[in-house]
Image (cartoon, rainbow, N blue to C red; front, side, top):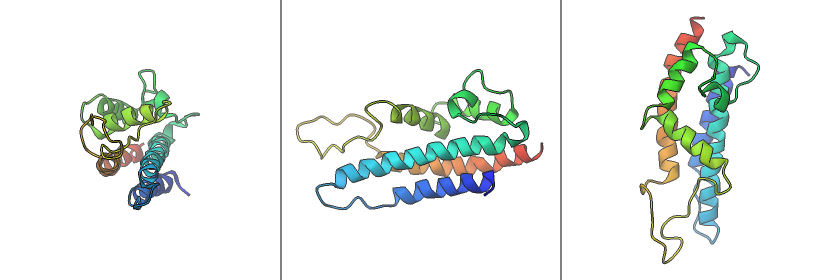
Length: 154
């Protein structure tokens, strides 16, 4: 499989996970949280695949998003573009990187819905992680074409 094909496959699989219904049994809340975190982990794999794809011409040894998108990442035009996007509040990449960092923390990123625990005050934007991730994946796919075009010029 080509790097481009793998990126597309991982994005598609993340979207498929988000379409799985949680059900209505006693495990529905846990299943929803598992699907959200699973789709987010799939999105992380897609991000690394994308980084591999758009830096193919540079023959980098590693493709970890923390390294490549960090301040000491390689000076490749596509990476520079992505670093700028990551620094922009409200961008899909800024949102994704924040959620990926939380995913690797002990508490994870998925949260119980406000109706799941009686007596707790709900805090947050109110948008479900799955809905936000759908938005993020859509924006990422829109950005892919431009990144692929500049990468192919090399």
